[in-house]
Image: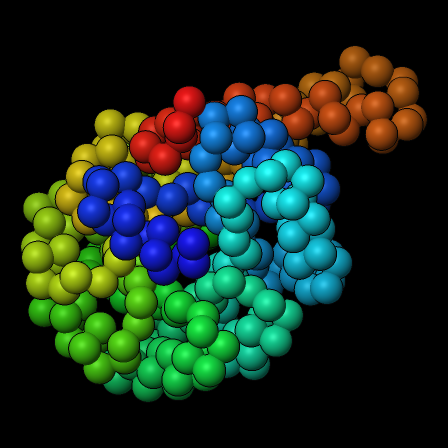
Length: 274
């Protein structure tokens, strides 16, 4: 099953794919162990920073081998592709889906850039995600710039994009104030366009709000910050209590809390089969 088919199936069933970023072997292992434990499909996301850190060939081969080793239904996705050049590299590297993020550009430029990527990806048979509205990134102020149903419909119609990350009150990173998703807005966007809708910045959002978002059209939920935060917090505690220098003995202990976190998240989105 291709990723677009999976998202459409989730749309029909009222569930969502949990799309998880990974940063190294340990965080990749945590994702795979959790998904295997609950029998859920995996969508492994890579940003430019992670690609620059691991190298695109190494990252893709790690991900493909892990999917095979754990016997899971799995996909590799470019998260927040900031340029057409990066998207092209990822298409050539065999990514299953790509995101072009021109959301901080004027509407017309976002449309033009996204349309170019959709045309590029079509020859590879790869679906494209884009973002519309203001979803605060790390260090940016939250609030304002929400996606409107009218703009969402126009954007989808003019670009032919397969999925759309919408701004309904979430933010990347942790929240300075308790998050409150604008569910009526999401419901209106979902009614305005049949495109697959994506929730970015799910770290720290209460599970009941995420489930309500899924019930109103979200079919892909991105998770990144909580993964690396959980791993690093565990690792710091372990390092304070040991003189062990063999990282092969130390790092695996920090994987376990991430697995526990992710098992709960897979169950939250509804695609865990056990």
